[in-house]
Length: 167
Image 1 (tube, rainbow, N blue to C red):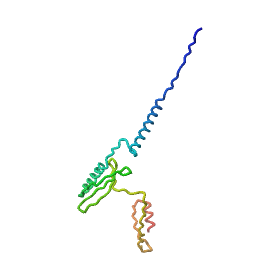
Image 2 (spheres, helix red, strand yellow):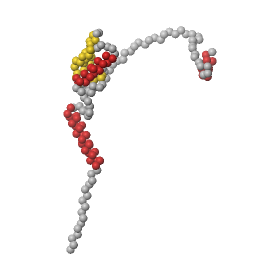
Image 3 (cartoon, one colour):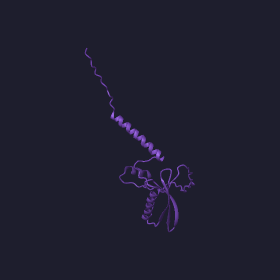
C-alpha cells in the first residue's frame, strides 16, 4: 500500500503595518500623558522654555526699565519678590522710584518671560456702571425760515434739484 501524503498548509495571518503603528503610537501617547500629569499635577508642554519666577521677573524688570528710558523718564525699578500663581503666570512686585516719589506695583509675566501683563482684572466680580445725569439740550430759537447753507457743484443734477427746492 502506498502511503498518501497530504499537504497541510498553515496560514499565518499577516499583520497590517498601519494598525501596528497606530497601536504603538496610541500606547506611547497614553504613557506620555500619564507621566506628564502625574509628575507635576499640571500640563507639561513639550519644548516650552519655562523660566524660574525670578528669571522671568528680571526679564520683565529690564523691559520696564527700557520702557521708561525710551520715554525719557528717570525711574529706578527694583524687584521685591516673584512667585508662581495657580494660573500658570508669575506674579512679581517691584518698587518704582523717581523724583516724585516711590510706589510698589504688582505685575504678571508669562512662564517663558515673553508676555508682560501690567494689570489683572477679575472677571468674577461684577461692576455697576456709573450713570451720568443727562445733559439738557440747548435751547434753539424757533424761526419761520431756517438758516441753511447748501453747497452744490454746478454739474450735479441732484444738487441743482435741491437748490431749486431751497429757493
